[in-house]
Image (cartoon, rainbow, N blue to C red; front, side, top):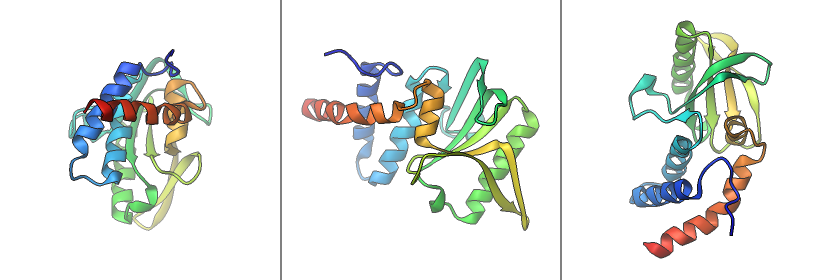
Length: 180
């Protein structure tokens, strides 16, 4: 049987599924989902997953020398990603801290965008993130709230990349569990 996913090798996905299952231990399903989705990007071209606590504490850094076209038409060369399971799970202080971290990144690099990627978003979106900081409503085109499917589409160039992955995962999980 040929491998269906062009954006990640079968061996890499299998290895990542095994690592996720091995790390599962006493962690909750939510933590395992977060681990899986954050770390899978180390196997996708132009993505880098920094060691925990390094490189500005970003979860994923996506860089393309030719440029990345954002949904508003702007072109940048780097996207810094903070990934959480759900936006609604963040309290206002955590949301404010993340937003300020992203603003800070833009001050030092105006050739980038910062994405808050939601692994378990209720609907597909790639929207300008607006929030309240110091009692004022603020937003910036290069600070985005993005659903996981939209982020996969951007980094792989395939609109249904997340769906494709979800379709092969049961087979990969079954194979990994059988070998355990």
